[in-house]
Length: 221
Image (cartoon, rainbow, N blue to C red):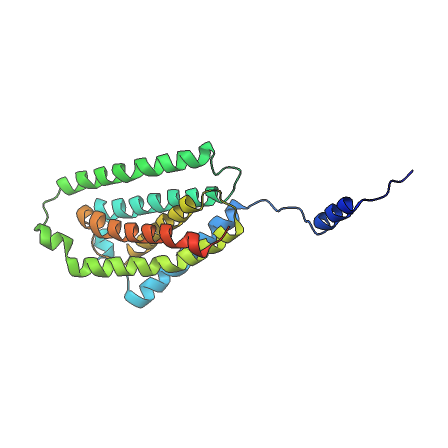
């Protein structure tokens, strides 16, 4: 004998009537979006500002490859931490913790390798090595190159459901700045580890802190 529906049953039926199955996140699609943006920004930077003039000679130097490898590793780990943090099922899981630990290891290891490269060469004076005029240009350029990446990452963040928005925002800032620094490395003729640590590192720090403060206010989960 059919039972009569109560108002509560009708309310529940109305709430679930429009529900649709949740599509699982596709990490490959999100990663491809980031890669596509990098592949657009690199030729755009070269078209607007040019490839570094000493590229053939630079490719024979260990410092050049150290710079690109260090920046790519830093940006890649930061981007992976961001993408993992967008899934609430793994935000507090061991996978995300491993990525943050790897990032904490990569930074000092990269700086240590840079110091070894620096110790093997006899460079100019400290003032000449840091070259504050080009250093300021480096800061501004990396910041500007980070903006399109931040915009793309904000889109991904809106589609996700992180349980720690501040941590996710920090990962987004580190990733955007890291990719921006990697892209700028194809134009910048400075491979000095001290220069990279001060100016590239300063730009990454500025973008990361700004993202950590601003993005949770722009993206409401």
